[in-house]
Image (cartoon, rainbow, N blue to C red; front, top):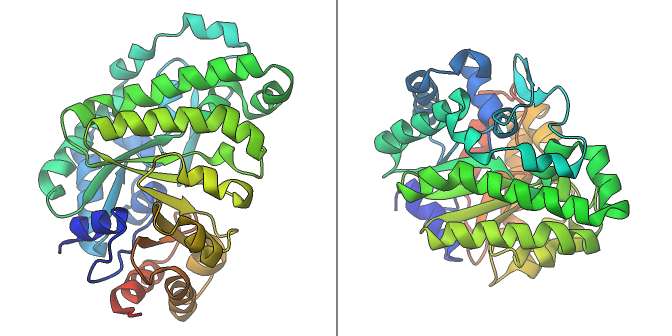
Length: 342
């Protein structure tokens, strides 16, 4: 099996000959370790592709997440101002809208006319042409609820969930269409074999199980069903403590659910067994950034011991990693999965 086949065998709840291990996202880390940054790559898809291809060949990663770190660009394409900050992912200077009725003034097709989005799309085509037979080439975007919170402002969104639920629903529905529009050409052209969804604002740290079920879950199910209808797999990551909604994450239809380091991996494995592939959950800060290679090996082995037996598991960090994680720690992380046996 090559790396792509191992990942998708795990997605199908099988047990590949070696447990797959992959970063989640890694866009900031890739650019930082390559000596470049987001802003300098706008309008340069060949250079963006080269950076990702060379990093993959140097590290041997089984998944490339094209667009990782650029998720706010989908909102900037509609008129929001984006602030670049060197090694970190660019963020928005302010929300795109202050009131839900402003959505009527927005044109989702502005996304396709944006230079940065076009750069990501074209770079993804190049990477897929070069590496798509060997590894998983994915595109990544915020999940609908998180995208809605960025469009509307996180605090405004949280208030609306309680006080103006119909406004919150309108923004989530718009965000779902925006995310779908981003993935659309890459899925229809069969460029990517997987989409990656990061829905950090759906965390139990921010919204309740009930509000997740009412607002976030239906939008995720719709986006994932649309992706499956186009023949691609789906990886879903929700940050923070999702202990109160793990069963609902399994109901999204995602082929694989990546969980945060705050979650008990063994309990999650018991709940997910036979339902969907589980990925996680080495601490990205305490272990991968601040630990030694020996610390990384020990933490990775602990995750593997808890969840790898029987298949349907991918070793991942509990979230995206900081840009300055040492390469030797990433290598230790990958090496531990390669050598692990039940």
